[in-house]
Length: 60
Image (cartoon, rainbow, N blue to C red):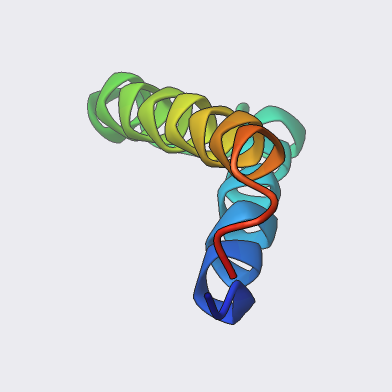
């Protein structure tokens, strides 16, 4: 199995979370909550993908 897309998604999800934390003062209040929820959902899915890839190492 090719993990390239999964690795790119994980990097982007954590980068989005970091950007949301670093620039939380500059994001307009109307967008802040929605973007934070999306970032949390992406990060949770990235953690799921990490755990899933560790539990299925021989399926490549």
